[in-house]
Image 1: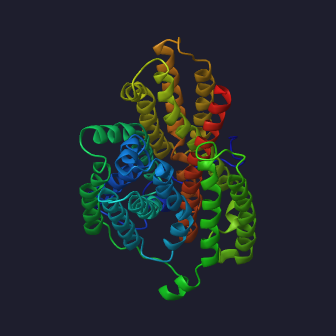
Image 2: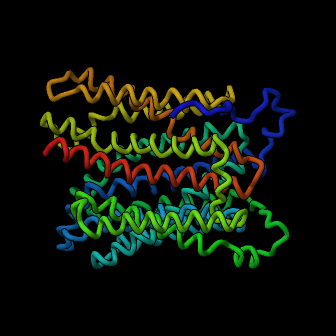
Length: 455
């Protein structure tokens, strides 16, 4: 990604006492802030783990239910509502109490996890995964939005960097935890694990987070909900579903030339065109106002989120295979990529601290992906006879480059609309949605590339 046309400076002033950007919308004590953010981190960790912990548990689940043909739906059922409802949650956060929405989606995620843990059949497990996915979608957006409301612009990059660190950890340790629980306890504990931790987080948010006022432009809550762009909500869900289903099926369950895959991809394109036309017609009342993308920073942030998170997911998923080709076990290969994980964690946190201190985000937006691209090129030169020092060194460079970029784009999106409550929630949801879309498209592209090379 090239540097934006205008400097991506996070709007902070050196004089903290005089700067408006140093005043939080919702004043909180340090203890309240620590409790609320700690609760958000716990649930964010669970939601991130649920994306990966199931991967190593799937063979055991398939054997338990005798349902090998339903394996892909166990993963897709969680992912589809998580991606499809992000824009919806981003919009309702500006017309309803963010605290109530946050508590509601945590409860939905917990109930979905309980359904999965107690599932008597594979169909009920799939239903539970979909239910939990709804909660995961809402919490991912609501916690990012609330953090933007309870922190200053200068504090925010540090908090977002910590979210990035949590995601880096969950991407690596998720499969290890899932495999360990499945082998030594029960696959059901992949979901039971969420219940006590989520319960603690729910209690902390209930007791520590104050109510956050909303501005409905003189409308009652009922009127705001009635005027919500419900057609846009339906179209956005349809676009995401029609696109992501064939992307996940292609090359796995069905060949890319399968008529169903082709038809769904074509339908997703047609539905996207209808969605854009409808949103243009709705103007300021649209689910996703298109004029947001007239700002170069916002357009750049969306593209940046998509491609950086695409690369991170590919690296997290395929690096272990590189070690397994050398005869390492699945567990050992997970340990082998610890340098990548640690580099990503440190880079995410340190970049947040630097942005908070100096107020500039664009160097990280530019040099992070550049380092990741260089590392990817170096990784391409490796083979099974390459030294472990080279493999670890390239991992560290890749982890550091992508780590600084993971949450920086979200910081910029929120700074761009920091004074517009409605656009702030929509910008948060859009940047997060592009990250999730990058995961799905990235894995599909990587699978295509690997099968082409191996064939």
